[in-house]
Length: 110
Image (cartoon, rainbow, N blue to C red):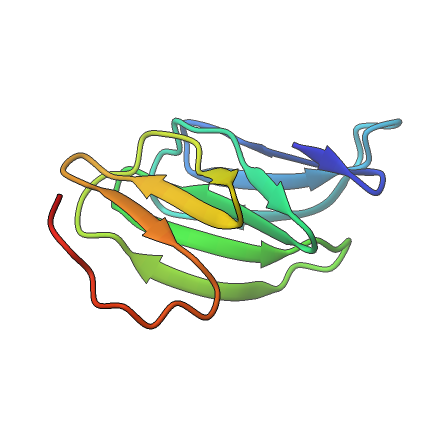
């Protein structure tokens, strides 16, 4: 994923890299300690990425490494998160989660 001259890539060894897309030089590297099969998703100033341990890590879109949030989704996340209609969709091996800012409803099984 690329935005604002920042390239974010992940690999099967569990590393997430923030690179300069013109030179390939790293700004930072973060070890998620689990393989990531998906591509990062950039939404506004945040970068979302899941791993096979079920963690979703949210990074600040920045040359400086900053974790905004990390949450475990209950099982492996192999797919790239998707944004549609102001809703973030994240799938793990068992469920699809629809997350919307300001939502107050309880989770439902569907």
